[in-house]
Length: 533
Image (cartoon, rainbow, N blue to C red; front, side, top):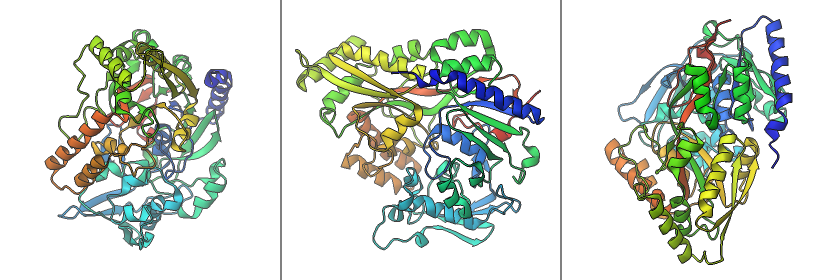
């Protein structure tokens, strides 16, 4: 399939140069940063991708935020308290918090925003992250007798927001850093929905406001003069460029056209490290690279088939040879370094030899009716990057040895994820999950049968669902971790998704860019950075 990103590279370069000249002519400090892909939307209640998260961290500010160390710090709220039983949180908003049109940010704006994302009519994919809030689940599922007015988010006054919970939630502050908890400006929501391509439609409360929106080219943000900490925002303009063509992004970085990239072409990693030294940054990340199996569709509803496919993947080869040692082999759903947990569940064949795994994979496929002239035919979908393409083709070659014939469907970032979220048919699809908060629940919830937004393979295991509900009601952290570990073991055995790799953060960072720090959350808020001339 034609690589559209490569085809459009000259156009994108022209856009970079034009945008650079315009900003320089204005005498402004401009930060040019590559982004993971083209955003589907800038509506925080309808987003779900990392590319959108990077933009939203600059455009909007939640009650709390991540700083450059990935730590939770005050955002629109200057302080907060928690009740002794952990079920009521009270946030005090900053007196000088304002929207980009100069209006004050009020506690009632947050009430409106939480109600909006949980309103089933909004169609928010991430609404179930907020189920710890009192009545949130019933409201989102349109349960009989439920009402948005019953949601446990209230505003006693314009600077005080109270969040009442169904149960104590140890990761609540981490959760509130997520885009699902970002506020929208109530009076401009309708206009933004009707005219999403017009920057003036978007009223935001972050360090930056939308200035220019050029699909498949760039998105320009300018410093928000009404932001409460505007005096300490050093960079005037941030220009995001979709950079799924990682090799092209690396070339632009070396030419000085980008100050930051969010990924590195794995096959060039060693060469770039040798040439650029400490401008190449690698660090741990709360993220897993998966293959989603459509477990609601024959023959992939057969665990023997799913296990055979998983057995035959040489993760060490892929991590080292395809990704240049920048990723770790993944034998479990939950990544290392996760909080509120202990030992993670892992695939039982981790320490078997490659030959032992291949023999078992062949036996399993034979017992499922494949082999002896009856190949298993698979359509493998993935989004376009060099790294993903090389990974997919390596896995296809490994599967060939056990009688699997693989056809590839390659689409751009936006199309790929939209197709999956909208319920498009597939056999196997590449997927990556970046932790929204440091807790195993944030990875395991992907497999709950009622998670329509993210359970893309339509996995359904009542025992797993029961354990997840039991863990949600458990107050003791250690007992909760043990319950989640049991649930973790079920999905690791059933393999509705095949874990392949655990991510690292991989950045090219200009020596002109000051303040950058890698963190487990992959958060890079532009407001904490500065550029030397």
